[in-house]
Image (cartoon, rainbow, N blue to C red; front, side):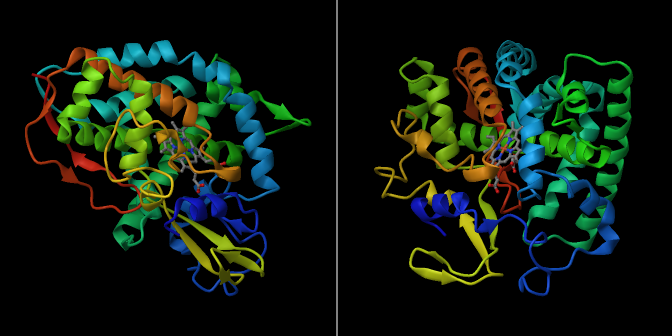
Length: 362
Ligand code: HEM
């Protein structure tokens, strides 16, 4: 699916699911590869992830996460995001990915969860290794690394949850440990998957939005100037950054029932549907002159970047605050920002970003 309307319809269609294992076997869902038992620690870490679940389990866990990840807790991060962006933005020449976007984004997510930043390097390494499992061409070596990372990450989260049970704090991990709905709390395996997905989903896409977005801005100096001179607010520009070069390009859905038809085509039970976000975000039926990068575009927020339907990004309000603060710091502190070398793309397709973006703050 490449059209905006079709992608959106698929995201909202309850007959399509991210997972099918609650309604059928791998044999019935022909394109599914069985989960390789050598990578059990990885599958265990995913088992209760919101991204792996469908109702009713998804509904129960999403409610618990939403009860802990409240608008108030997200709003409270506006000040810390601004502070962190200013503190962590280097002067002179630096790699925007490793030198700013990664440390900033991991610091924000650590602040939200209440995770000490002394483990930031481990968190980044675990996350990078694990997200390779979402690509289309994962090698055995990458799968082994993802499995090892998942096991280490699990042990870390279990000890963190124990600490917060003993000594509660004002942070998301404590709220996730304590929150209950209808007398039911998250179990340990559910807690592990939830914290891992929040940490991983919570920084990979933000880092890549910053990388892709700053590259777009510096390759379109007039658009950068519109921010520098104050004609366009960073918050508005963030939407165009996500629309024009989204950090997540491909999501998939399985047809869970017979009788599904999309854009006039029958989609039999067991089929897999690919949703191409990058294409949907450039659909000329929705966006005028869709290939043009225009930070002041009025309907940029209609992009599909945060998904839709029951799996819609639960972190979108935080991502928006975080990206706005980073962009504001760049505009105010480094108005002369410029590229100093050809950027290197990462070699991934699903999680679309840059390996390095060498810039000078002037
Ligand atoms: C620019 C940054 C971000 C983008 C573009 C993004 C995009 C997305 C998208 C497209 C989905 C839906 C996937 C699907 O329908 O298959 C999603 C889900 C999710 N995102 Fe984000 N995200 C971002 C930042 C964040 C942040 C900061 C957090 C957490 C703090 C987060 C946590 C999650 C979680 C937990 C889910 C799963 C929700 C569910 O399945 O119910 N994301 N995100």
